[in-house]
Length: 504
Image 1 (cartoon, rainbow, N blue to C red):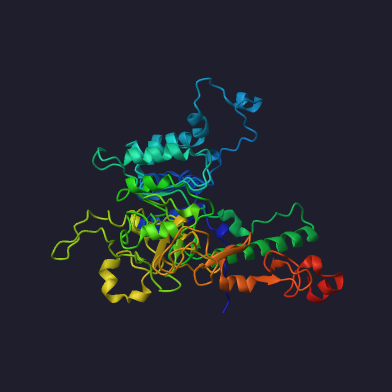
Image 2: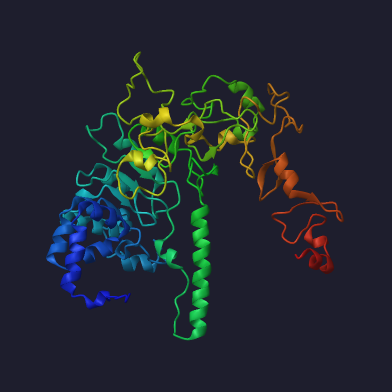
């Protein structure tokens, strides 16, 4: 049978436009296609003819999700800016230009254009990752009625004053706020932004000429970078529910805890409050001896605030398998959810979920529903309707803890930890109490210690696996952070012959 192939370029442009127009005229297909296109591509599609322009500008769901992270006009890249230097004077055209107007100028210009074309009101998921975003700009998104943003992502942004941002969030969530405000229900601010999509195509250098050597080098480079990026994306598990340990690459200020408390039930974040028994929001508050914990803790962990921001996701305690406050299970009510005698939930809508469950990256592609943004992979969006049919061991769960609650009881190597019931602290005179004296060196009372500066605090099993004593100089060394060392001796004590034998 003869196979006939028709080139796409051989078809008349009218036929191509007609077929594509008929395909995208289906609202379902259009709304599931546009989130994968950049704003530049969508506007170019609208500029092809009047039919496409009407379709794009008169379908509200087209601009439901707007990602400005890769828009060139939104970038703020002026190298060498110095407030007292010449570069600043050159770019500061108006003497009355404020710092906020200067740093948020590109985004304000884009918002003005979207508002003029009556598009801004349709944007419900707004992604500004990596751009120049000021606290005043976020305040406008919160209070300006022309914005309808429900989920905002400002991860890894520049020129953001976090103190002013916390003040704007607390003001927007005040008790005397107008009814129905703020419209914003989810804020991504702590986690890292997603890698640039352009890297998915290789990310390597493009060939400068048509020579075979240049093409071969570029092809090899693209292949290696594509493989490395693919492996990194595949191996990176979902935050909180699947990935254990530290969830954020940077340290979060403790002042954010009061903001999370003020926004509880109103705005959800990509983190939650720590549920350790030392915090008053914990279900285990009052069930453990705080005085004994303070006496047995190291001086750095004696004063723990009333609230803390969770930065670590944990499994159950290495000894008892649980935690004093229990698990955070997707879809289950918190201890504070009030029920009447007929077991009906009396909390207001999704207020119990907002603040109890973290937002999961990346922001949702096809929805602005907050439950979709919080729902773990493979779990039902409405878990209460399916909870009777889901075994308990298959439910997504984790234990959120702050760094203060994990001090002296968390292994950075294997990510195991010991709860306050099973382990009081390293300064305890006995397993059941503390005395505030010198730290105890007994293996039964000390769970983690530092044997390598780079490794951090590790448990005894991790230390036995990574630490060795040199048979030649008698010094201790780490197998991971002393490259070239072997199981017998550290690298400086090894001769050239020994290094060749061990392959160092």
